[in-house]
Image (cartoon, rainbow, N blue to C red; front, side, top):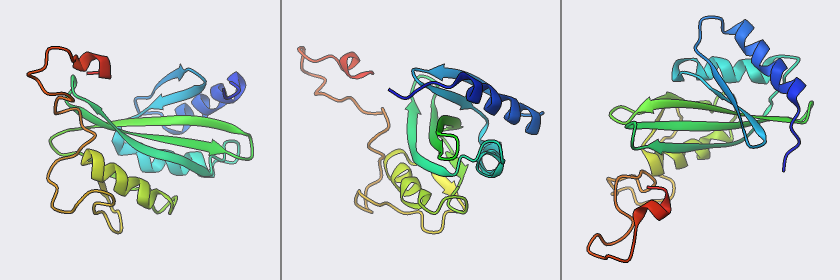
Length: 169
């Protein structure tokens, strides 16, 4: 498990609050990592700030992935960032609606986000505005659905011995 550094967590929250005074920011610690939830409108500016701020230096995008909240009819993106300078990790989350799921691309900040955003588009249908080549990366181009959304039952509904709630649905 990753070592929790409460002082670094508090510094990150304080710096973000100072820099983004008007933004609604939620914070919580999920297991071993600080998780900050923000609106999708500030994602590019926030990630640029976290990368460039001298006292933070989150210069490595560990992963970027999608989420589906069927009960809220929302999709989300999670960014895991790592500061090699301070050996600290954080998780940034944002949400968008299912009808028009668009979030700004971060490929200009981290070129490695290219394939991660394509994978998230491929499996969740989240469009990354400004992405240089947003197209399916693993599924067939003809596919019209997004397989990681929780829109379809996992098992044959005629079977009495299976229960979707066992799979988080």
